[in-house]
Length: 87
Image (cartoon, rainbow, N blue to C red; front, top):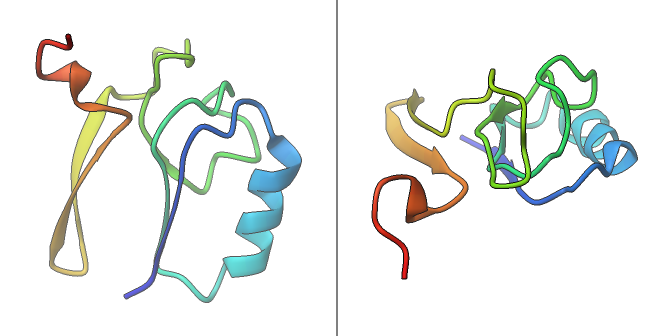
């Protein structure tokens, strides 16, 4: 299994599209761990499994996800502050 994991792209749509186009067909899943600063319907992010970061404002993004991928459980989050008190 191959997984592409990115985070904190902060509006870099060209780079997200380039990664998708480069690795599509070679990987099993693409994950974005938040702070894309994009809409959930943006073409550049639509093929990624996405969670919400502290700079994301689209309410359609979940704060975190527990996702089985090929028998392996992935916990996808931008940070542990969604579940634990941060200091």
